[in-house]
Length: 208
Image (tube, rainbow, N blue to C red; front, top):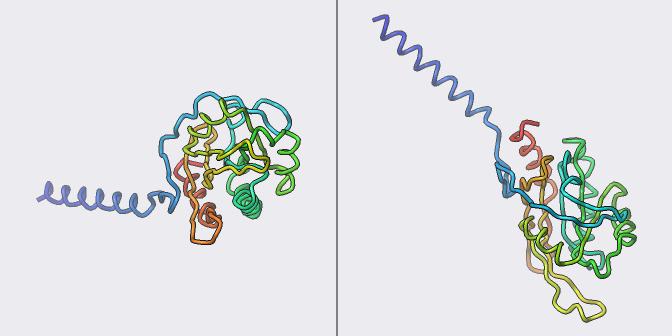
């Protein structure tokens, strides 16, 4: 009889622990593509808006939100950077190490000086970097993004590029991709409110 009671109590205890774990289990991001084990970005060397090297060390110790575009972009880039400006205080409140980095896919026209003034218009703390295509394209590809130039011979050429925002963790690894919503006649955009919520969940999953 005593053995039966012990087994019953043990079963109740295990069930209670399992229920508590389920209730308090950290939630996965709602919409972001999340990589529980961060993905290595490899080695890279870009040039930032101050003319200094932008390397893996530039991402160490930060939660970095990277967006690929170019300063002559007519729609997606200014819209996304304005959206990021609006939620920047929320990102910093969640983790003071948060930073926004604009990666230019147009090294021919986007000089460091132009990049610096462009991102400062949205938020003086935003960072920017670019590199020759031979160095830039592999880096962008490792972010899970892509860009292409239809006809660079034209004076006012346009660049097709991803509208996603990539989250890199403080170890310099790809942690998540926030993909945009799109509708006919509208500029693709990442839903900022959801991105903030997903970032909060990711921080919890990371133990922050």
